[in-house]
Length: 502
Ligand code: BES
Ligand code: ZN
Ligand code: ZN
Image (cartoon, rainbow, N blue to C red; front, side, top):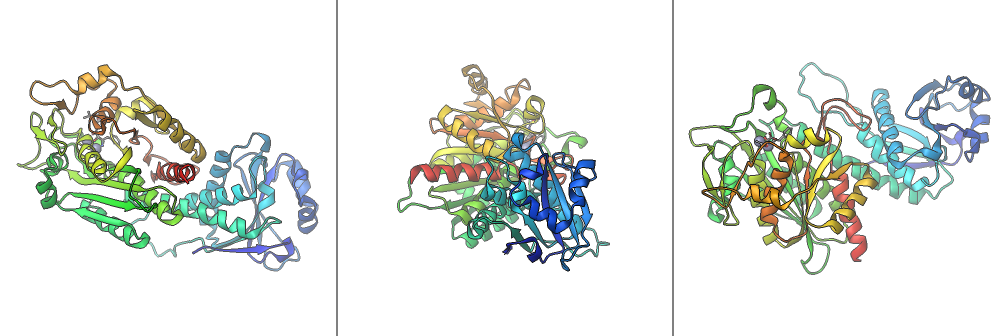
């Protein structure tokens, strides 16, 4: 639990570290003169000379040797020209601060809130973005090194120098850290090695989450999936010695279970490609093929904390995609949970088979709007790169609202077309209703479009996070590895829907 404390003046600061934002025109900041007289005139000279860098995202650390016996150093955070500073840039800047906090092992520190004010970003926004950004930037990938005897750093208490209402600030800070913690949980799920995170384990994780937040939860086993005839997920699981799981979590906000938003995640704990096997270089990293499931579980964690006014049903299909004498083969024809038949042309297009059954189940469980999230295709990376999530929809109004949430969180989402001609190619098969791999041209659309065949007329958004779920390099808001992408956007979207309904 992070504790929030208040210091009214700089003299009252009683941590070793103070964090101060420096902009192009510091003298405009409320309280700047107080700060200068506290620290000493040299500050203004260092800013002028560039020894303290005011450029956006640049950090300068300077020792403090004045009268305040507690304070040892000040971290100056460059903001550049605050007229052009966006919320997302401020969040990213705080991500870099989080990284510094970890390097300094600063479990407790003080932030001077007003030094970061930039119209129209007010003190409450800053507190939220600070908690979210530093919380994400602080994250470290768990490792299994036997030689490490380092004590892990953690964020313990934050102190604010501010004139704003400290209770409001504390509330905003709390929500920001709820968001960051959920992203970090999702990142850890993605980063876990596949021998440790099996479908069974993912089920246990969901069960614990549900217990903590009082969600209704159901974990279907292989035998139960067989009884229900879930041919999609079972076919993908056929080559595995690990059992599959279909995980359902319900968050009920209203008295009646109605108008639930369905969040559906791909939880493939390892994707070898099956008999359409991946090349050895393409297989490494496929432990992250459950990034969609992680995004949904992370969003549910935020929902459990924030408790928005919107019913939510989360459904995750989980299995690995392996090879054995019994595994699914290209040319197999399978019957899905919905009753539709599918000609399997490529066993590496497994995610859509798992998602299709999960979507059918989510509808049965009362989802009247659907969002599926999946590391579905390499095609989305070819089309949009590693920093944009690709999307499909059958409902423009729903999609517009989702884009608004994504702008709020700074997670880039881009809509792609799904035409009648595309659908025709998905429905083309001599032996079945559908095929699972119509071609390699523009195949992000075929992946999502296949899922759409099971969504039918329910308002729906498909999110392909194959490019955005796992970062190849460190970035402002986190290290290399699982990013927890879409956790914040899904939760923000649900929160905003709740605000509309009430
Ligand atoms: N899990 C992969 C998609 C993927 C690729 C995720 C790269 C993360 C990074 C998916 O199951 C897959 O193999 N898709 C195939 C589909 C093809 C066989 C139609 C692909 O994208 O090549
Ligand atoms: Zn695959
Ligand atoms: Zn996959």
